[in-house]
Length: 257
Ligand SMILES: C[S@@+](CC[C@H](N)C(=O)[O-])C[C@H]1O[C@@H](n2cnc3c(N)ncnc32)[C@H](O)[C@@H]1O
Image (cartoon, rainbow, N blue to C red):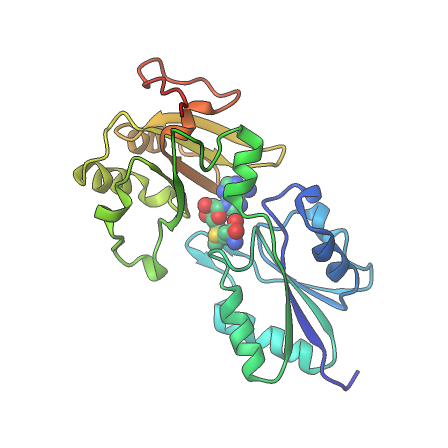
């Protein structure tokens, strides 16, 4: 192989193999090399051609096995050698996925990049649990927020603007900081009784759910941590959760016009 190859930046979805798009599957099936993250399931990796070169670059929380700069170089080197590279990421590559950073690096080096969007963890969670991200009478909007900063820097989110009972907050990468997040939101006026859902491994056979309240989620998670990856949903929409016991003292907010 001598002509330059290309890189497909593929969203593999939240875990279940049938939550990948047809485009994502087509791209993966034509790859010569697959560079994949830790959250991509073995069932999805099995869709790659049997002779594809498989390159794990998984990042575990607090344990970056391959630094981002090196991942960029690996993608560039493979594509420069003429490989068609599938860069597989959990969820969507453009939501807390650093897909746009990789695309910018590759395009600057003259490598063609194409995206396949993926179902982000929040959408997978919604379909699995019945907790909608918006719902008439309960939430007029949704915000996806990171609960973690690079190199464990202090969280400096705009707590005042986030403390809005009419907007569902979905916290990605928030397991280590959920107590601090809840405290800051209550300081800005969110009620301690606001329902919170924690979901681990959403959409997979290992899925686990825990329903709590804003004033208790920190102690709940400290007492019984859930296995990564975990997503937190804060808002009245959580009262619509399927198959998870609601604490008796959670206000039973009903959807209305
Ligand atoms: C680096 S972010 C990647 C997000 C991904 N690009 C997406 O669109 O879902 C990793 C975080 O996503 C969340 N996450 C990803 N997959 C998940 C799943 N199946 N269940 C629960 N949370 C998940 C967790 O909060 C995890 O810490």
